[in-house]
Length: 92
Image (cartoon, rainbow, N blue to C red):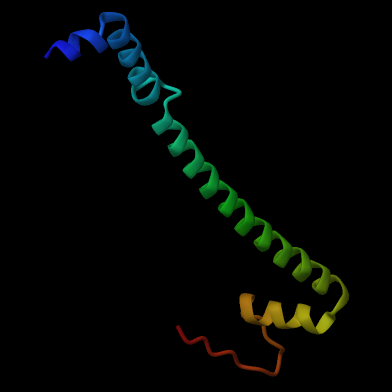
């Protein structure tokens, strides 16, 4: 037990306690940084998904502006519109 008294002193214990506080219990701790990194990865993946969705709708919008057949297809499918001589049956 003499070696403990020789190598472990009060200032060393204070420094070790302060380091443990900084690493685990501080608001800017290592655990909080890992959580922030996980949230950042999740948000970046969601941004990527939203950019893909935006690109899809931009292409669809451009297609609707230039292609009347595509416009008719969308209107007939989504809004159940019909020509005067047609009957529309909706199946759910």
